[in-house]
Amino acid sequence: MVEPAAEALLRRMFDAAVAAAMPERAVPAHLPQPARGRTVVIGAGKASAAMAAAVEANMPGDLEGLVITRYAHAVPCQRIEIVEAAHPVPDRAGERAAGRILAMVQALGTDDLVLALISGGGSSLLALPAPGLSLDDEQAVNKALLRSGASIDEMNCVRKHLSAIKGGRLAAAAHPARLVALLISDVPGDDPAVIASGPTVGDPTTRHDALGIIAKYGIELAPHVRAHLESDASESVKPDDPRLAAVENILIATPQASLEAAAAVAREVGITPVILGDSLEGEARDVGKVMAGIAKQVVRHGQPVPRPCVLLSGGETTVTVKGDGTGGRNVEFLLALAVALGDEPGVSALAADTDGVDGAAEVAGAWMTDQTLATAAAMGIDAKASLAANDGHGFFAALGHQLITGPTLTNVNDFRAVLIR
Picture 1 (cartoon, rainbow, N blue to C red):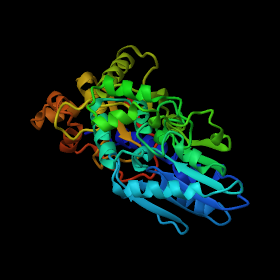
Picture 2: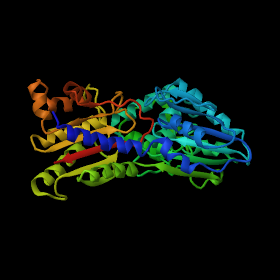
Picture 3: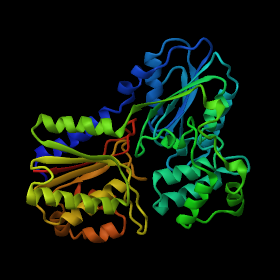
Picture 4: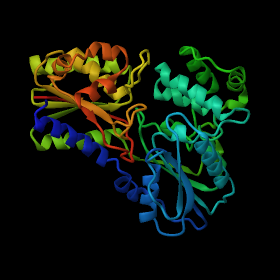
């Protein structure tokens, strides 16, 4: 069992990272001036309902609108309607609500303001297929992408070219109204065109890029879906489109800011923080191996920083699913880290998704110590076999090392902390 101070410190750093991205903290300073006409608030994402509540609490004047959030992520609002829908695979509730949002913004004029609240998860929640496609088509492609090991950038590129609302189409539909989008980033590099598949941002990718991604991962498409991607009708709205001239996209919370908040917690107790990056990508188990190598270097040689220290990182890894376990990318990273560390002494770690949901499980992530493998072995659990089965959640649940937060109502992607005493 990890000493309480280490486990408590790891959890304090995670909590600080989440707090730095909470909508009630991030939204108020970025609200636009009231419009002369109507103000319509729309949005989608795991944080969108909490963002809407922050708008209602801090923005004067009349408000109306609709935002879509994940099931169990709703926050009571008085003037802005909240609809819950499915994530990561879209459902009918998301499709209906996305259609209503698109209709709301199409009837506005130059004196009106559209305030868009966009956060991670919005791509699945804004489930409005392009004409000629169905929700079943989107669901099938989404499931295949999630299992393929494709990066979030690649998944969103394909989604944009199958959608009637992503890839700048929402902003184009709102023209000539002024549109201000407040964005909570959950993507490596904080590119607004990638967050929630960029409904308010011109898209530099093309349908040819989408087809290349489909080919790269060997994803089977129904003939009519492939025909759509091969046609000009699938092309997204480009950055130089004149309908986007009155659009402003503002990043209000980012993974880097959350990592810096965690680093401040470490400094308070005399531990040196090292932020290795806010946008690490790749297979989760490969990132775990690399992080183990860095930790061993610190333990054995005091480089690149002497102990005690904590290695902090964010971003979004991927998992190519081959087993039948219940593991998300954070627990897969953590299990791979533990296996690669072996019996290396003095190393504890926590890995979790800042939205409180790692993969399809309602679990944020987990933590480990230098005794994790020995404890598992004493219980008859083979860590390497669990990793091969993509069963990180099952492994850490058996040890009682899961981190369960419930919905945090924000999302700045993954948080990883490797504490070296």
